[in-house]
Amino acid sequence: MSIRIIRIGEDPALRQRAKEVTKFNAAIHKLLDDMAETMRHADGVGLAANQIGILKRLVVIDVGQGLIELVNPEILERRGQQYGPEGCLSLPGISGKVERAQYVKIRAQNRDGEPFELEGEDLLARCIQHEIDHLNGILFTDYLREDEIERVEERA
Image (cartoon, rainbow, N blue to C red; front, side, top):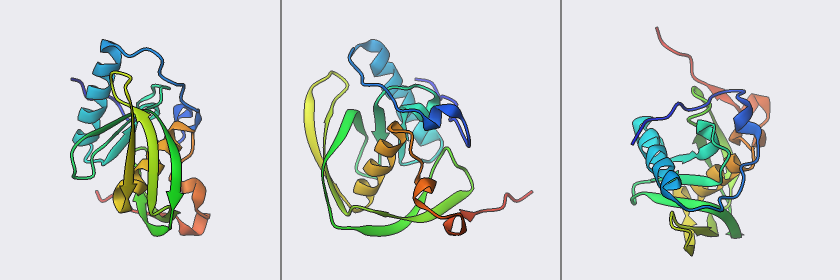
């Protein structure tokens, strides 16, 4: 496993739509492993492949319930709403309160291409929506007005 470089700010990869994964092989397994290690090393709870410059529809998530790998995820259902803080490994020092669905149901594939469905609420639902947005070139700040974006000053 390797720690990959996380793309930040205005990197073009963050604004591109990731492509569907069609080949499930050792390279995809290694990429998912690297993504999990990179996410953990950065103290994140989610990471999409385009955040490391790979335009494939891959996501890793760990909100404290164990690692979840999502290949080609798509949201099937959204219910309710929640309003809460979000940050992003690709936008260090920036946060803001974003409205998201309280509950989501998704369809995805595992690392071997086998389809499955997953339901999530609260933080897991927020994280799933945030990471799928990444796969579509959307950042959480796109949901905010400029005056709603909070910036944390770096301390010397």
